[in-house]
Image (cartoon, rainbow, N blue to C red):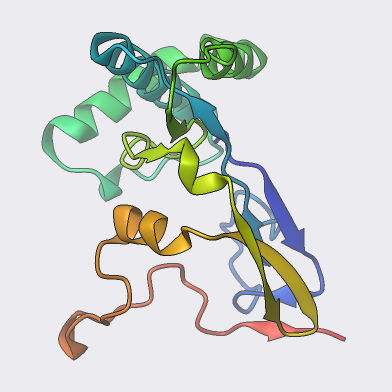
Length: 187
């Protein structure tokens, strides 16, 4: 909803035969999500205020999705998504973008803050807080035929977000989660 993407057009994630695809194949490509880091205030109470309101804006924005799959949610979360997405349809998406952007930048000039968060992440990950020092040193890695710059503390961030990311789940629990088991790259 608020995550910009770099889409690799000469690719396909799956065979494009879904006539019910509300995005008309536009998301049937490999992509890289771009997550934005913003400062959180030093006060724990203000941090909760910012994160709660980011989640609320996200819930409202779900009303603008072409297709909202409520079956992904259970119990009270399903009710919250349904309720806030209905009201979110009333608020223009342009206004929601401005609210989200303004809230993200609210503490931008704060020099005291050493805690950052991914302001455009989905609600179940938006509470992840990282130390600004983790993003001060970078190193270059080779990937295919490119050299990429990554943070020196990548392991700290990956552990924070995914836990023990180097240990695969038990065989019975291994399930493709991004629906991209039929990837094709076109030259």
